[in-house]
Amino acid sequence: MTEPSLPIQHYYHDDFSWCYGCGTNNASGHHFETRWDGEETVTEYLPRPEHTAIPGFVYGGLLASLVDCHSTGSAALALYRQEGHEPGDGAPVPRCVTASLHVEYLKPTPMGVRLQVRGRIEEISVKKAVVVSQVAAGEQVVATARVVAVRAPQTMTG
View 1 (cartoon, rainbow, N blue to C red):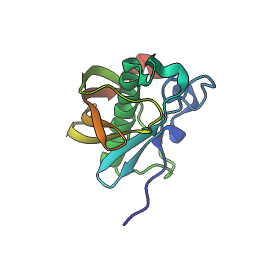
View 2 (view 1 turned 60 degrees about the vertical axis):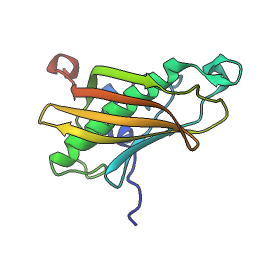
View 3 (view 1 turned 180 degrees about the vertical axis):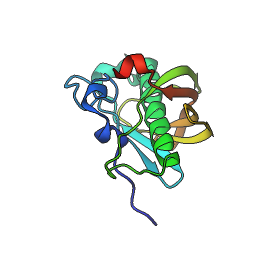
View 4 (view 1 turned 45 degrees about the horizontal axis):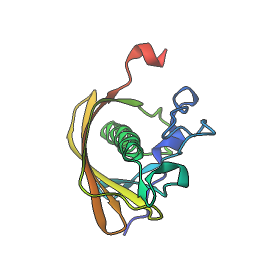
């Protein structure tokens, strides 16, 4: 079995490391981290008390944010791999933004349980990737998602 790769967010250029969800430079953010796990991508997160919707359950917006950053990170990983690179090899990492985000909430998400998003690349081209994911709280799938992520436009990259 191969060792999990390092999170792609650690390799984003500093100008693209401010996202509230996954930015390493955002002291107030969630600091979501996405990495390869075999042919799937994975992001894990333990919700904090401020993510409560009603006592005992996670606010659905956190799940959307988690899926959003997981998917843009997954797209960056896939585009990077398509270009012949892996995290840490020194080549500039592509930065992606969300073009479409669709989340299906299947069950209430309990607090106090580590969330895990597992994704796979459904489609990839030079400029975009379609990522399909499942969010699990422990062994229970609580949401599914489909995200279209595209390379950040030149106007965002300077």
